[in-house]
Length: 69
Image 1: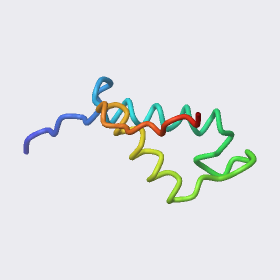
Image 2: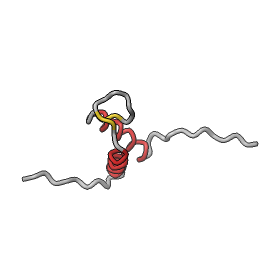
Image 3: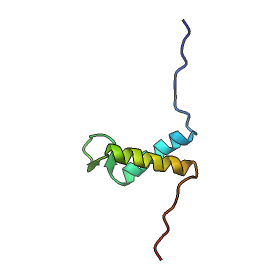
Image 4: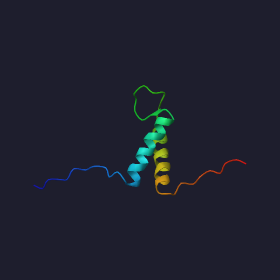
């Protein structure tokens, strides 16, 4: 039987960086990714939408909204 290599995240992939960015945004916005007593618990939609936006940002595909004025 062949030993399977241990799977670890690669720290410089767009997906990994997007996940770290997602965690940082949740912290800044005081949104909990788990039920640990913080003000708000993230919804499934918020997590998926925010991760998708973070992934776009890491791939330089994010579209910026124009500032008013």
